[in-house]
Image (cartoon, rainbow, N blue to C red; front, side, top):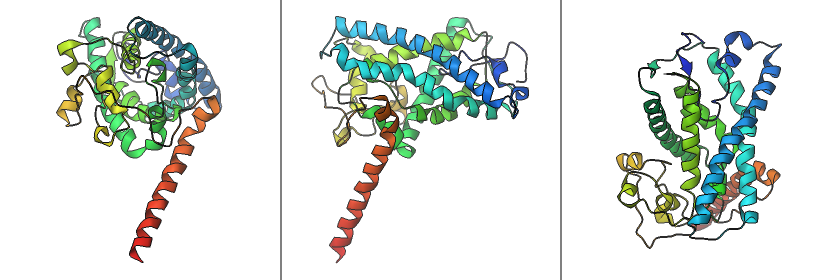
Length: 305
């Protein structure tokens, strides 16, 4: 990477622990490429640790102020998928990042002049903005993959998992833009990741925690539940995971009333219960969508006869 040591890349929340030197242009050669990928994928296993810490805290909040009761058995598949996700995504992201860094693009936005707490705040704001548009992209262009996240019929922190193939959209909307930032240390994205991970789990929690007037600015469980609703009037609303401002700015906000507590999930799609089901769920959803489209086309043809 070009630039001085002060320009440490803020890769993104999912590869904050990976050293910049791992992606140097000189490291990407036919002889060392496979070893580099295996080494980096192994390092991604450590990303399960902050996720586990954040999820543990979230489950504690759920147990203290629970609105709906879920057992540890209910949570187990989700916990497993949450812990596996960084490792599985580590198979996809390193090759993409290696190719990106072959361009040797130096960071263009220096945040080192800001205090470290302010750097974390800026990272969280930028992450939330990027995540908003990544989320909309996934709904429109890679729904069969993203729909795995929408398949659970119960909302709690452990069911906040996505699918490893979403690493592709994370690369486009987070890894590339965030690699253009200059930070004081790699600890900055790690601290931001911890805060983001907890809130991502928390907004999926069925707790009685009420943010009061702050709910008009900060996403809470009631706001995000609308995004997972099975009711058509709630579709394509409330994309942002942390702040409601992006949904308000771009016309996708829906603030539920106190009584609104819709059922969640996808019609005709069951949540994954095993690792193989989890990994293969996008194919199942894609086939169901294709069959549904064909059925509608056949119906239209019959009406024309």
